[in-house]
Image (cartoon, rainbow, N blue to C red; front, side, top):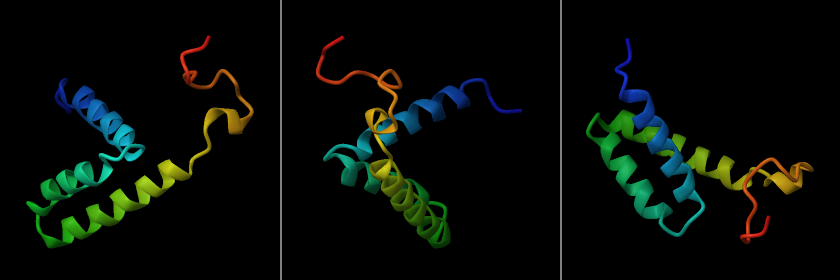
Length: 81
């Protein structure tokens, strides 16, 4: 059974990771994530590096809600209602 605290922690961490991809902080976050996986060995580090880079590419290539034709799909930017 997964510990009750694990799911919220992973969820928060993944949300922070996705948010960082869209900022200049991405390289720093990427390095930190890969450092964690290096502790598990070279093979895990290589797999993690590929996964992180592919995921970052997919996130940055994803259409924003307005491009999907859904004006109410996500948060409104610019502070307007």
